[in-house]
View 1 (cartoon, helix red, strand yellow):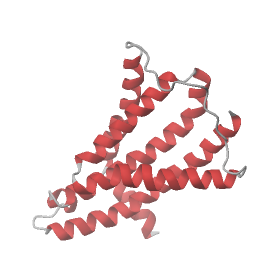
View 2 (cartoon, helix red, strand yellow):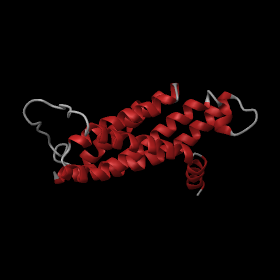
View 3 (tube, rainbow, N blue to C red):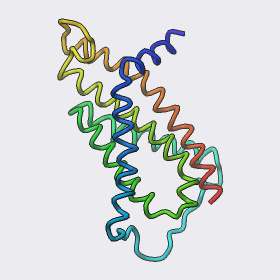
View 4 (cartoon, rainbow, N blue to C red):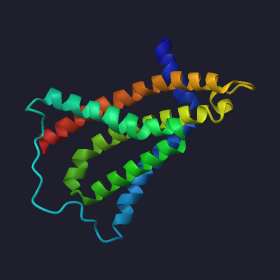
Length: 192
């Protein structure tokens, strides 16, 4: 029960940051797609249509696992969370960059593809939002320790340790959202 209470206390104490990152990401996707309507459409790919297989070696389970592992390790941790450990605004910057890419892809997609991809976009996007929150918290913990620990005098090392413990629990949300998104994405690819 203490694990669940740790997750809930993290959410309640960092709700403003989570809401801000959600607005940053999903607002960025929406604004990018909207602004592209006023510009000449970008050419994303030139040449014959790309051929792809909806599953890895015909196995839905392998497809889910490969999507999940790639999104968790590369997309969430390496690209979004890790840069924030060094300089905390970088997590938000890479989150906005991902929002821009998704906005371009949504703008170029037909409506029926957008509707099929929407659940994946929401779930995967929420996983990336929590990954950005983690990177921001850890990065700010060694710059401004009082912001993380809410104590009068706390060392940078203590603040960093507390932030890393909180963020380990936040990564439970990242893994949960990305795993569900991988399942939904695999089903969507099978339908297309």
